[in-house]
Structure formats: structure tokens, C-alpha cells
Length: 64
Image (cartoon, rainbow, N blue to C red; front, side):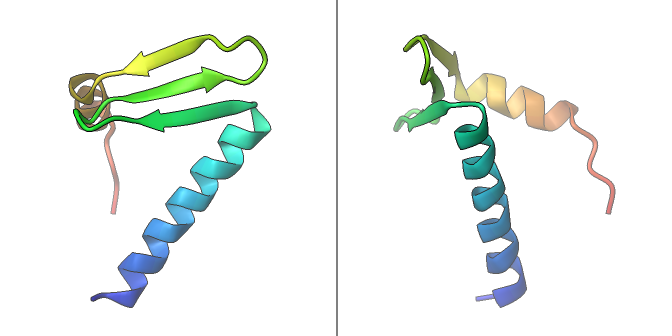
């Protein structure tokens, strides 16, 4: 296992968690790969399907 890559993943998860807390959202993850952001203020739910997530990822240019 590459420790550097594992630490990078941990950093990503911690950053995401901090943003969720800052904006008062919960997160649900489903077996089909979809994720749902739950508004902590209103309870409204915002679903992103696995396909939507993949499309977003594909459109994001990552520079190395």
C-alpha cells in the first residue's frame, strides 16, 4: 500500500467532511454509487447519481 496516496485520500475525506459541517449538510452514500446531500437546516435532499458524478469528474481538468 502506498502510504503517500493513502494520506492524500484521508486529506480529501477530511476536507469534504469539514465542508459538509461548515455548510450544515449531511451525506448519504448508496450502493448504486449515488450520493445525497441533506440540508441540515431544512431537510431538503439533493441527489447526485453515479453518472452525474462521473460526468462532473470527467469535465474537471486535473493538472499534475
